[in-house]
Image (cartoon, rainbow, N blue to C red; front, side):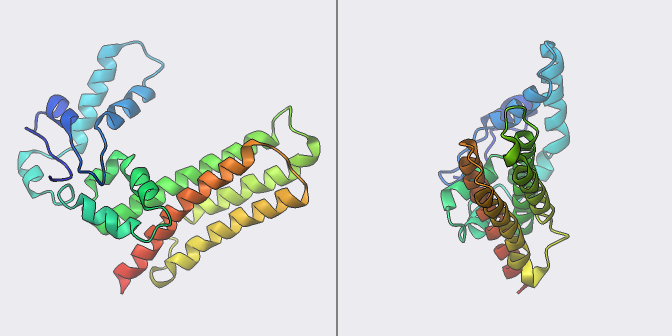
Length: 225
């Protein structure tokens, strides 16, 4: 079975029946859920569906283009090339397939770019998490300096998740600097004896995403050789 199948190029109906193989199973509802969340503040159902239709019209190919689109059929292979070196293959595939743009990647490099973008956003999310703790009214004052530094560390880490920043033959080394930032945060938390229950899970979650970025960086190096 191809990674992406549609019975006909009838945007609002056929594309909603997208099917992926066992390695990258995902329903097209991910796109509709994203668009509905964007318009969450409006109760105008017509506007929501009009937005969905417009999105599909702009982002999916016409029938002639669809016949020549190679990425859907190669989806398992492309994902495997990026995720095979990840510490958690299943997590890597799941994360990449959670973003509908992965389906449109024309080649392995496109998957790499998308992977880095996903991890960049997760790094910013983690930075905001620490920033929220640092500025929280209920946070122990003695914890706040370390929390602020952690927010800064993960913000710096997000800046490394960019294809323009990574050097082809040294991509993994550059991405590893992001892991150094995370470890720096952990050291500061330990030194200041910061004890907040939600922090270990947040850092562990970020490290799972980091593993995806590291796999993407290694793939990038291999593409250069």
